[in-house]
Length: 114
Length: 111
Image (tube, rainbow over all chains, first blue to last red; front, side, top):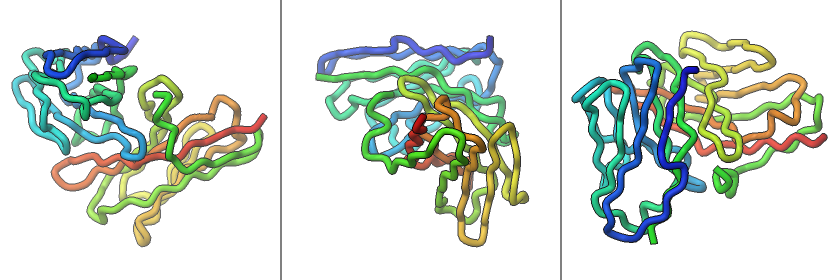
């Protein structure tokens, strides 16, 4: 089954404690991205990757890092989480942005930073 | 997620009626538009897309209309069912392949 898998689904952490949210897709998609979703603000792109070892900032990259060492994985790293990073995070992948293919989203990771 | 539906405009529709969800987009250079459905506790799910060289596209029970003159997009759902209850939002692809998402509309289907 084609899917994007994020882990964990829920995470509560303390300010400053580094964390990683994993994302994996089994569709051999080139394009992957991370979004955060906050009430009233919709989905905002954090980082995206056009292919292996190619990443770029989205609209709200501050406080986040990503890596794309393999095509299937695109982890999101918060080196020093802060309460304003409490949000619902989604990873997405698509075959090719230019091809117009729709994005497949993961189930989401609800992060709370206290 | 559960909090996604808060602070959103809500459309309440009787089961069996047609639903029309509207979206105003901002970038006249956007060339590709997508409608997503997000059920509570789940990630967004692709519904239908349309390119800027089209005015209308139909899927199964859904139709997307694009009016480039007024930068307006609409999603029509025929014979709305309880399973259609969700948050719906549009996305536009503009310059440099950047995709921007709308904030969404919550659809409530009344049985």
